Image (cartoon, rainbow, N blue to C red; front, side, top):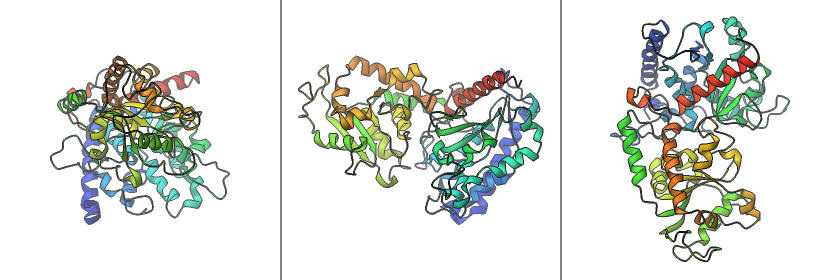
Length: 456
């Protein structure tokens, strides 16, 4: 890989492009480029020492138990292109979300160099990458210390920025589920994770995570990055047209691993149901293998085996089947949420959830209650695993007209959950993507909090 063979050249290029974008951000901050409609939207990017972000990238091959993430650093975290002529498709790893978000923040139109006039303070700290030394490296027994060095810097370097609102106006991105940062401080010896989100010092900071817990107010889940990052509106529209035209010959699809243990669980139930169904002769509770309107599927159920991570950076492996499926099953795994949820949405495949923590209670900004109800199906996993409910029966019982409306709603969600490429065209920037919606939600969340506590 390039970063292995010539790391100095790689990091020079990476730092150079960051420098160019910082100059652009400074032009905005000094008023040389005057954006419109920034009232209530001003953000100050805290100038952190490079040890909190860019320097961490030089350790990309030091944690073999985790994975070597050097190849995923390319294109500011989007990863390498899926093929040389690709304009929109990359081998993106979700763990690079902090880089992707940082790069996009540098072109946010309402940046200010004055923290006193900012409505929010962004901390460009690569928390999940810094956490690797506690999760997989030599400091595994010191995981309660994760974040203390950052707080020490914030507390002693220009402390007035932090003290102005006690950190309530600060936010950061964490490219792992919140559970990985939630180990109780009193755990001795440590079990798993770091204690960043358990530190009282950071209780006031808004954390944008890939998966949030149900109760902490400061956590908010934002979409997993997929492999689709269009640079202009033409590539987005081209993909949307392909999704709309795609023939859905498979009723339901599961792309993932697991489900091979002998203990009852939802993934095993899915695999068993798919195995027991055969094209053309599946007998449902209604007595046939057709949906309510009599339209047969050539394939009732398909499993794309993604065991051992073989699908993670190969979008063709799962996106082609998803484009041909009407419903994409999204069972929980090690944690409730899955990147596959957003891969499926990207393919226009209606998500089927088995618990609220997988979607409904997570992505309130990107999948609000109304849109969620109109574009998804929920089947309680307990009903499937222990009560004999067949997923195929539920899905075949949905009228074709409703399925058509649901798919239309799913396709409408695509621009909102994708991460467009940095430096994209002005036309594409008129459509809010995952970053735009996350920033908007963060500003509203912080604004409400500041107002409630009378910290204005």
